[in-house]
Length: 171
Image (cartoon, rainbow, N blue to C red; front, top):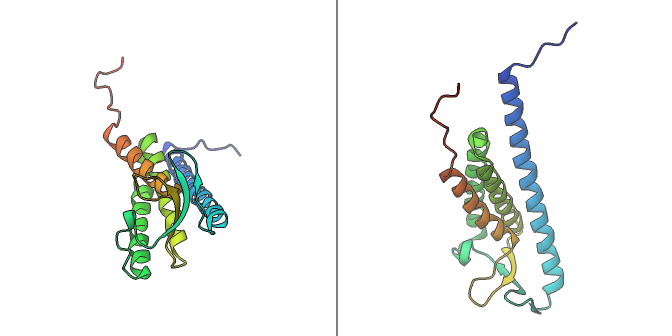
């Protein structure tokens, strides 16, 4: 029996599957790294101490709201539900458009999803998100926030600066 060569459609389907799996596995790994760092921050900073690292200090803070503590007075289930819906929408967008995303957009979406998942999972216990990176000029934040911010920037840049095909025909 001879092997049948793979059709181009099969190769594209395998490529989409690999890209989607890579997106999910990497995002989950980033969320896990974030949660480990948060656990270390809680373990090391629960006594109220501050560690001075120059422009950034390590100080424990629990944010019951979302970005910049917005919605901090809302019940935690409202924040959790809203965040879960946003993540579901982001996941749907990334899942369905991964074949058409540029490498930069795909990387940005993956990092954004990883950060969003890290903060979402941290929020599930009802105490709020653990923040520990403090400056004197910006609200206290965490690694997941860095992931979300850099992911949004990379996703947007990758979407705006999509390479355009060369209109001149090749001989």
